[in-house]
Every structure is written in C-alpha cells, then in structure tokens.
Image (cartoon, rainbow, N blue to C red; front, side, top):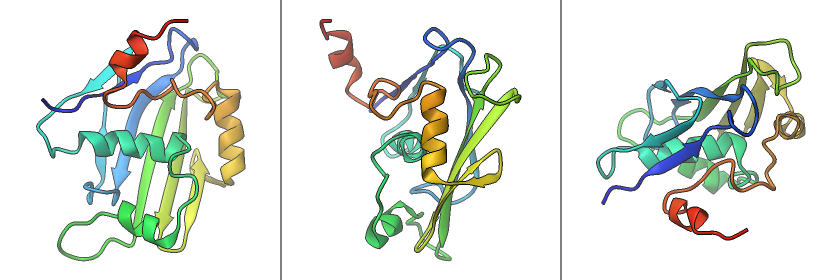
Length: 168
C-alpha cells in the first residue's frame, strides 16, 4: 500500500502548540512554492498515491526540526534541491509555522515561523524572518519542548505500529 506519514500534534502534550502550515520551495520534488495546510491541532496523516510527494513533506519537516539533515556536504545539498527538468534550482527552503497560542515559544507571537534555506554553499536559519544561528534555533525548539533527543516528536512512516506496541 501507500506509505503514510503521521505527525502527532503536540496539543495534548504541550498545551496550545502545533504545526499550522508548512511552506516548501525547491526542496526535493517541490520546485514551486507549495503550501501544506491546514494541520489539525491533534493528529495529522498524509495519504496519497505512490510518488505523490508524501515522503518529501515528511523529509521537509525533518529538514527543519530534526537531526537527520544537520550536517550537509555539497553532494547532500545537491540531492535536496529540486531534481526536475528545466532551469536548475539553486536553493531550497522549508518554513514551518507553529501555532503559539499557548506560549510554548518564549515570544509574544500567536504564530512562530522557523525557516531553513540551503544552496550549494549556504545553510541558513530564520525565526520569524530574522536570521538566526542553528544553535539559536535548536535552543528555541528545546525551550518549546521539541528536543532532538526525543524521537517521538516526529513519527516516521512504518513506525506507528512499533510505537503503539512498545511497552513502558
């Protein structure tokens, strides 16, 4: 069957914070700016035909929040840039917009945006469109309760069954 990506919301765990929207441009199969929304404050599941880009939405979220793409060589960067025909894509960006109504991010904003942009030689982060270092972003995520040491913030394809069957 088709792979399924599941993104548990943080509402029950972290009052009032969840992903509202993901913006992807130039990343893997997403050449044009693509908006993935709305996300529910509880659980979200992405389904579709094989090859429709479900895995790349998941990869985009990991690209910003996870540790999987933390150190990128030039070849790795090239592999993340859109690989389609036509004019070459020279940069890619993924922006995740969180609902911060519960104040999990320590800022007076209802929505908080974290964006990562890469090119062949650049790797930049932005918080609410202001340039930030990778460590500043990681500290902000940890303050909000999204620590890279906690593998259950993002549940990968095929991992839902094993997670459900785990004993404490």
